[in-house]
Image 1: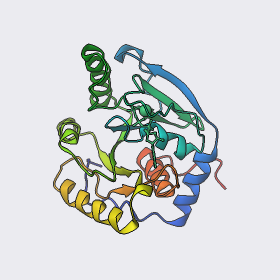
Image 2: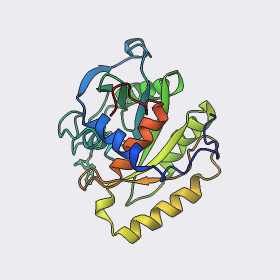
Image 3: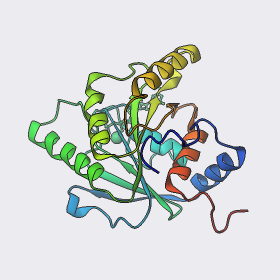
Amino acid sequence: MSPGDAREPDPGDYPDEEIEAARVLFARPAVFMMGAVSVAGLPEPDLPEVAFAGRSNVGKSSLINALVGQKHLARASNEPGRTREVNFFLVDGRLRLVDLPGYGWARAAKGEVKKFQALGRDYLRGRPNLRRAYLLIDARHGLKEVDEEPMAAFDQAAVSYQVILTKADKLKPAEVEAVRARTEARIAKRPAAFPGVIATSSEKGTGLPELRAAIVRACGIGDSPDAG
Ligand SMILES: Nc1nc2c(ncn2[C@@H]2O[C@H](COP(=O)(O)OP(=O)(O)OP(=O)(O)O)[C@@H](O)[C@H]2O)c(=O)[nH]1
Ligand SMILES: [Mg+2]
């Protein structure tokens, strides 16, 4: 199916069985596999992957931890730019979650920032087993100019991506709804954007069941051989 295909079901619409199957999958063991510092060091593209991209400090590592229900699997930090490698986490030996270096962060040495951001870009462009990229946006800020560049890059490379709002717990539900509606309207015409924006909170667990189901569906691993 092509990216952004309008015939795909509404991403908010996951039947209970899919929510439950995804919950079970993400409750299985998740382990840190490896961190890559160069394209040559990436693991074999032998399992479906989904990747988490977004500004530094937006909550990528925290979201990965929350998805698998482990506090310290991915390194989360107050210090922006913490994740400088492309980090791979293996869930139940069946899919990988990929934590990408954040962008829009100016405090590190310029050359070094360029290096790890270029690595993230190269990963996103050339990964045959990448089933979906998740572009994380802080719910308090909404889409910013700095997010235009990755969206343009996804569109150009035809990398299917979905926008995820993070830190929804910092806003009132009505405010989250407003940001979500505004964000959905802004991505509606983007060719590679998957329709629908999921609002999440890694602290409170909001939106995580849906996001797990979305990942399982994107990876096409819904029917586990040993399910049931
Ligand atoms: N209130 C709240 N805080 C959050 C949430 N998610 C992340 N944070 C906080 O935001 C800060 C940054 O989180 P990280 O997960 O390290 O962010 P990151 O996107 O991985 O950052 P880089 O690795 O620097 O790109 C941390 O202090 C987290 O505790 C959330 O859902 N709610
Ligand atoms: Mg991080």
